[in-house]
Image (cartoon, rainbow, N blue to C red; front, side, top):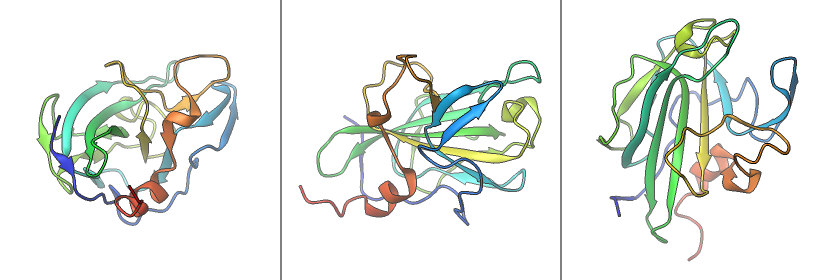
Length: 177
């Protein structure tokens, strides 16, 4: 078991969800129909992204996208241990470049993990606008990259394994055990 996460903070300031919101239905030519599994915060390229809490990096990779095949770009997944219950949960950061962490690294809340990549670049997965995708996953993790949306009948994940990021961070540690 890793270091227990004493507190959490949002990874970017200001934290204003100006793109897709957690749970929002997505319908597009590329995605078809899905639910978004995090918050998209539109911001300037180069904006620093901080680790939401103490933990261990379990995934740090560039999954470059193209016009023909969009992807995560830079993605970081950090494993956290709940301070009260000992349960594992994961913070997911997508569309980054200049990754400042690597697999296995121990990180502390506020540590720089990367920067928001420019829009329509391979590093942001070739999504039109520069933004941070931030998600919180509480389900079982099998060592595979986590999805950014839930497609019906796909079977890769369940909506119940995801949390609305901002309320989760703001209420962390305040729940009764």
